[in-house]
Image 1 (cartoon, one colour):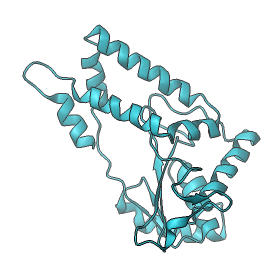
Image 2 (image 1 turned 45 degrees about the vertical axis):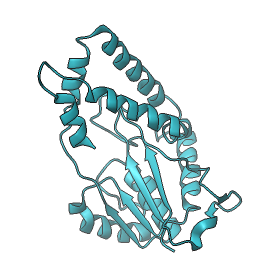
Image 3 (image 1 turned 120 degrees about the vertical axis):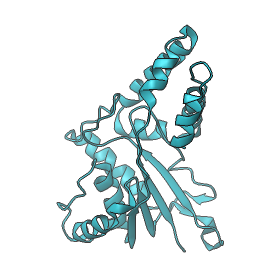
Amino acid sequence: MKQILFVVLISSIFACNSKVDALPNQDKSTGVNENLQSSKIPVLNFGTPDLGQASDANSSMINLSDPKEKADLKKMVEKLVKFKPTVILLELEPINNDYIKETYEKYKVDQMERLNYSDEMNSIGLEVGRLSGTKRIYGIDSQMGFGYPSLIELANRNTTDGLFVENMMTYYKKTNSLKLLEQYHEMNTEAAKMRTFDYYNFLATQHTENNYEGAKIIAEFY
């Protein structure tokens, strides 16, 4: 039965979804979904902060040279391995698929072989694949320029809207300052996902007179 793990690179201000240790109808002793024999393909959508340098304005403060953080990352990988994905999707563009495949084959033999991207692609994507015996890992992203700063500028013209943005930035900065497992727990909750969707929807309302900048930018982003 095909199982798909979607490892998402999370930007500084936006978080993503789905619970790792509470899958529907899951046997918690094994982590295996009871519905494996159904016709539906189980998909686990897993959000992760950047595990390395990032250009985002509010990047995660995780220090992977800390033995405790490394141990916690290993625990998280072990949880994901229990899902037994047969396919892993990374937030990389499909143009990289040959490179991903070649690197993954090398990585299975020598874990010093790495994708030249933020390290969650390696420490989570490739490592879960290696330990799970995953056959296929490839990119599914579509990268674009995101006119986020212009929407924040529009929001800050209004005191109430500016305060909402400030509160959201405080929330994301607080999340980014958490320890690794705490960050994973927070950003992979339904509440965190809905909070971010609400923020997107708020940004979609930002506009100048007779224009619809927010709606156009957020629609393109979606």
